[in-house]
Length: 561
Ligand code: C2E
Ligand code: MG
Ligand code: MG
Image 1 (spheres, rainbow, N blue to C red):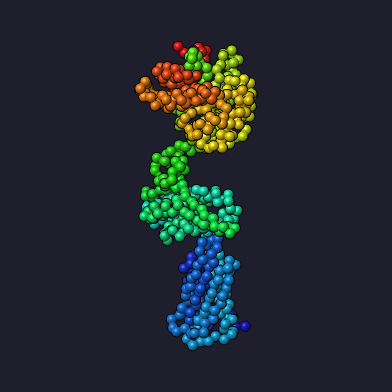
Image 2: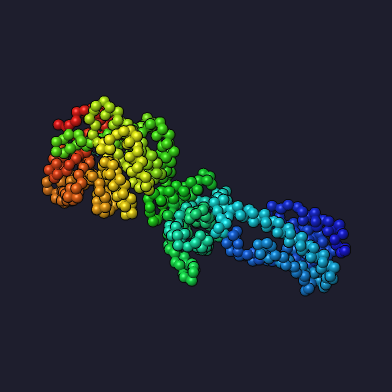
């Protein structure tokens, strides 16, 4: 047995080695102190540590480092003893001991040194496992760059050092990554994501960060002077990937929200600002970065509030339905009405423009449309029971319903539940930007027509491919948007508006659709519309949207003077 193993110095060595440490510096000091306990007995002059860390899930790049762990002043011998240890992850730690002066170690001493080296390795390994765990918590394991927790650490550090104001916060979403997922198997798509993330890393300065939030969402903190270049990179990034003997090229751009970071009150502000800017960028569908402003904040908060309060308001019956009469142009009789919703909430009456676009984005509009249909059916049923001759009422159905293959069936079942004859309901649909939606819409319109329920295209002319829509569907009525009515001052000289309007109306009529014009405000407009053959008119000239009571009184009168 070696003399060192039994010595009091070795005991001291082990005691020091067991001390916990909290930083890399503390670890180095501990190892140095431990070696100092045995240096005299072993005649150690210098101990070198060389670390070779492989690239892994936790490390985007491999790393090599070497350092002097211990050095005693004086000349070192030229017969070092080295030990090489390998970790489970494949990292290599080499520890080399140099003797003092002319000392040459015998085999027994070399065995003692081996024991010391092994202890150093274990300690180093233990600390680096803890380090790895800490890194793991802050790393996106799929691509090997920081995750949101790593990002927030970085933000907090800059915030405490009062350096945030020199940075721009960025939140971005890669466009077209879906395409990569479609054409490559999952694990290969992940590789492309790794290449993308590494490409971003290469662009960063040492004091900048990019982190993955998950999916194709990223955040970054970039020094102000580098921000424009960073935006250019993420908006125009080309990546190549070898798959099945082919080189695949991908081109990525991004939706970018950004925020300047002066006046940040706490580190959490950064995430709030950049995510709001990102949400606005997504809504605006802009190709350039959208920078945070306080107005956005108020806007997004209002949207969030509307979405949050919607369901409860629906249950509390805060949505009220107004009915705007439709008038037969020929004899000015009331021939229909349109249900238009308002939101009576917190002492205010909100108009559709204030909440419908928000409910559309969130999808809750579908529930509201069914609610309006349901209440309208109830009204029709009640009024019919009193003997009042009710007109057909049209209900607006958002294009958000397109994804629902059962829409026609659901509409019919609500109407039937209230025992309302089908001819009393008309469904107003708006055009869609997506051509394949026409096929779905055409089928839905067909199913409704088969059941005697009329359909109309609302806001005709303001949407997308209006003429395609006309060709593919079998609607009953076409509602021409009020922006197409030739304006008052256009009569009789300004010809262009009239030519357009009359041709749209003639086209619709030749295809067999009744023409409804909405937004009629003056006698002049009405006379013109009647003269050019419009069938039905609707607008303030006759009535504004009316509360139920006023509407029923109007229905009872039945005609306009
Ligand atoms: P819309 O379906 O095109 O309805 C016609 C809009 O024009 C209504 O606005 C109506 O009040 C307004 N209007 C009618 N006559 C005149 C006029 O002479 N002059 C002017 N300047 N405006 C007139 P409202 O009620 O604010 O509704 C706006 C839009 O909100 C509707 O446009 C419709 O797209 C949507 N909307 C309303 N209720 C519902 C609903 O229950 N479901 C869905 N999905 N959308 C609805
Ligand atoms: Mg409408
Ligand atoms: Mg309209």
